[in-house]
Image (cartoon, rainbow, N blue to C red; front, side, top):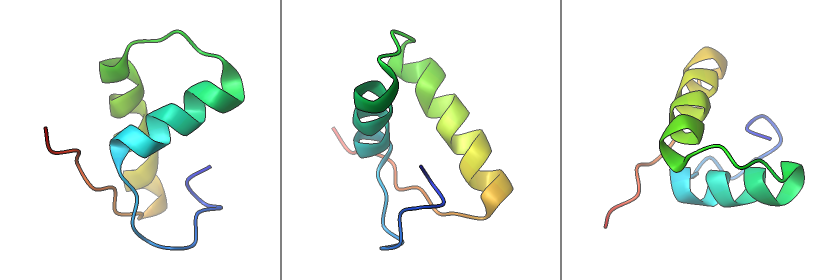
Length: 52
């Protein structure tokens, strides 16, 4: 999912929503955010934090 996004601007919230939509996972937002951050760092992709 991270590698197929070509716009370079990604937010954690958008990625979590997309991941839930595609996989149906019920893992916590914090768990998914950590997974996304780890994978993004490995791929060298910048992920923008969500501001609340």
